[in-house]
Image (cartoon, rainbow, N blue to C red; front, side):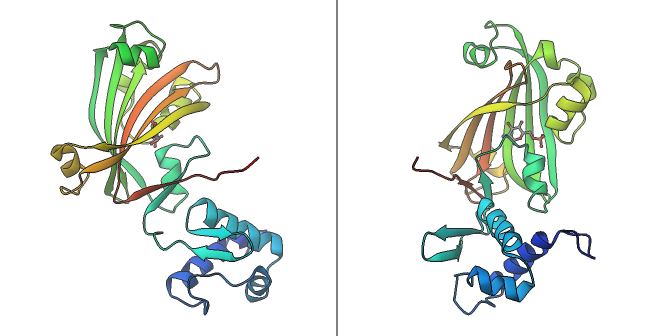
Amino acid sequence: METKAGKPKYQQIKELLVDSIQSGKFSNGACLPPERELCDRFHASRVTVRKAIKELEDEGKVYRIQGKGTFLNQQSNKITQVLTRLTSFTEDMHSRGMTAGSRILLTEQVAASAEIAEQLALEPGDPVILFRRLRLADGEPMAIETSYLNDKLFHPMLEKYTGGSFYSFMRDELGIMPRRAVQSIEVAVIPEWEARLLGNPSLAVALCMCRQTFDSNDRPIEFVVSKYRSDKYRLHIELYNL
Ligand code: GLP
């Protein structure tokens, strides 16, 4: 349902809930009032209220405890990355109302090492494009991303890519669709120059995510090592006992 303000009702409820939580308007501390009360308060249906809460949950701003209620996540000042969908940095930032940016640090053709060749289904020594960017959210450094790309597929980017979402460039300019990815995460010690580049010289470790991305023909198209600021980022995963 669209409202006069042009935003869907659930979106408005989401924003009102965040405001109310942050300004301590709910009497029950960090616990959200029951669904029924929220429906009355916002003149909305249960479906709409549930949708707003579900999105807040997906973004890691609230969490639910069965039979007890929905609670404010006290660490919600960190950016929460939900690890269930293949999204780009730009999409992640947009979904939080932030502006994504990047500074290109390096774009060059190199010979694939044995490890990179394996990740991209190439032979060691085959040409690959090494592409490194500093990723920014509302102008603030968040991550250093180093991508390795098969030169045969991505060669035109050496001249054509000048900035913006790389996934959009892939799709719109090269007709390559990122379809699925395998990602591993570990805490990595970072050198001082990386901590400085990330805007926090005292940062000793980063959340290091290695992503191997496949296109719609299941060809590996990129291998990316992203080092996210551990003081700004946290990861959110939903688990099921099936
Ligand atoms: C995320 C992933 C990278 C991917 C990037 C694309 O940050 N960790 O593997 O290359 O998104 O983002 P964008 O399209 O904003 O350049």
